[in-house]
Amino acid sequence: MRATRRVLEAVGAPLRYTECSAGESALAQGHKEVLPTETLAAIREHHLALKGPCTTPIGSGYRSVNVALRKSLNLYAAVRPVRNIPGIKTRFENVDLVIIRENTEGLYSGVESVITDDVVTSMKVATRPACKRIAQFAFRYLEHRNRKKLTVFHKANIMKLTDGMFLDEARKVHNAEFPKAAYDEMIIDAAFMRLVQDPTRFDMLLCENLYGDLVSDLCAGLVGGLGVTPGANIGDTDAVFEAVHGSAPDIAGQGIANPLALLMSAAMLLNHIADTRGDERCRDAAKKIRAAYDGALEAGERTRDLGGQLGTEQFADAIIKRC
Image 1 (cartoon, rainbow, N blue to C red):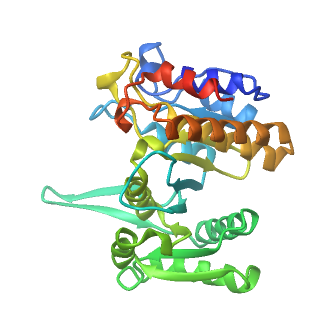
Image 2: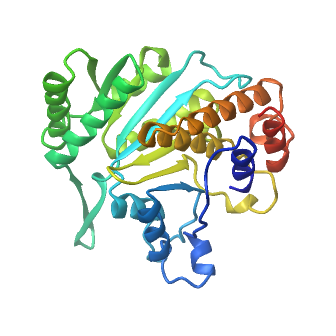
């Protein structure tokens, strides 16, 4: 986060900062919850947040920070762009995808029950309003960003009610509101096979919660891993931007973590501000950041996870000198 803020300041992004805590760091500061009420209140006041990866204690009864944020702020749309990065050689070229993930329902609703000592259940939840709003969000994004086609990944052949509703609402929104948009559907297991055969056949993917979680990590692997993929969680009033990857306590404090995914997420935040508040200074800053990190990577200035030797702050320096 420090490296990302340095780059934002170097490009003159017109931002002011309020620092808040979450995860294990919040507990270490004396808070009783991993998502303090003060943190939620600050996001609700400003409607925007740039969130670093947070560690939630395992097996301690604490709810995931990410899940709590999405539920509390109704951040129903996860947006995860995935593209090839200059200088990062992978098996695939010309990958340019956007995954739209429904963020509040499905199996991640957390509705689980113990039936007997040997039987437990987990309920997959789907509601028609949530299915409709994520479909509308995806088609609006397709139109606004001049994307080519929206493909819905589903398993409605087996989960006829839940995935069936998700698919039904996507079709209704397409036919009634965006009839000229290119649209198709694919069963999720076949879609995964197609993705690893030729990801360039896809453009935008719309998924329910669990599928979106899985497919976004798979797609990250097509372009170099989770260290080069940003993300956003967006609702009607609030938006939280974050790196797709989780925390790495084993390397914390060593100055070797790759800040790129968080920096890319910060650029998404700037574009979101430009789109929603009309501040074109933010869009200009986002363009400068993208050009700078593309240039650094193409020149071979990379962190260790990408085959280079730079530390966190050194990589930030390489970007800043190009801003």
